Length: 241
Length: 283
Image (cartoon, rainbow over the protein chains, first blue to last red):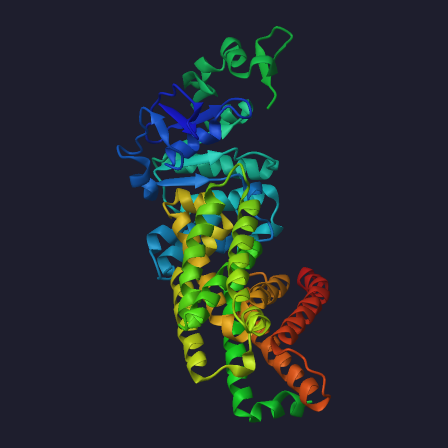
């Protein structure tokens, strides 16, 4: 399939399937189209060639089963909302128009906050939390949505070690519960920790498969071009974002 | 002091004016919270100017000012939603400025053809709150009810959209539709306020109390309550001050502008109090 903005294709020739409980890292340099691919799966950008199916249906028909975790630092830190309220927003599509979230929704939001280790910060304003804590709040919001597919955009950017650990643990629990996870990241180490499969991307798909087979020097060089760096011939490639 | 704040309102026309500004102040304050959170102050300013020709045309045709304002309010709310979503090369701010000035000059052109040009212009731009009659009050009340009910019904979604537009879209909400609703609500507030404070000063009623409340509250709900209270308070104090100075001291102070000045003073007080409050919360 191919995705385009204003008829200029941003991502082309992407082809792959993410089964339930699987975890895929979208890997590629900045501007490679990772976020665009995620937006296509969310049904927010037009697919000009081929098709995207989420749980066997068009993306727009599956929004209830899909949760999206944006980068925390893209949101307004001064916004007057508490961590708990931000998590509760994940329930809004279930609550429906006009009505207020009920007791079950509040319970779901609480247990999601607990799952990311932030129950004690529930009433803190979103913006006063650290970058890693904000990212955990957004993951909790996604957990509260009870998704079958989770899409994350650079979830580990600017995240402290503790938050990183808690994020990884929460993602592992979601997968154990049968949810599929797709995350855009440029951190190869974390991709290794969090995912079994990778999709190498630089405007087109360079490879899609098990992480051990895909993260080879040749493929990474093809993905990152001049940004790839070989270290002392021991086969390790470091890609700078 | 109590005399100053209560005495003027023994007169029936002052009572109607008070009711009107209390309603408008509270209503504009609440809508303003969404305007400030979405950083739409310039959009609301544009709306206030684009509604102006509607008022003028209704006046020339001898029709209800409200209907004229309503027609242009809806038209421009639709145009604005389109413009802010789809003008990449020109830039949304430039497109807004073009819309604002073209509609505004159209209004001025139309007014300039009348014989009572300056008097008419003044009324449309700055309103005449002391001339508010029973029918005007009822109209404001009806519009306030519509706006308040819509805000109440969509509060969750509007807050989510303001906080995280991509997240809202990913959850399946049509953000463009929510944006149109908010623009329509702003238009309705402007329409409701035309007679009392005119098309130019209403933007102060929308933005200033909400901005002040934003400095003092950490939740959307408390911000909204505070903005409504500050808006109503500013209306009351401003009306009383303009009456007092005009009647007792013989210096004519336009009521609408006095209200705006009082609101700005309230904002300054909030800005001064905000750091103190933050220190107390931190402790």
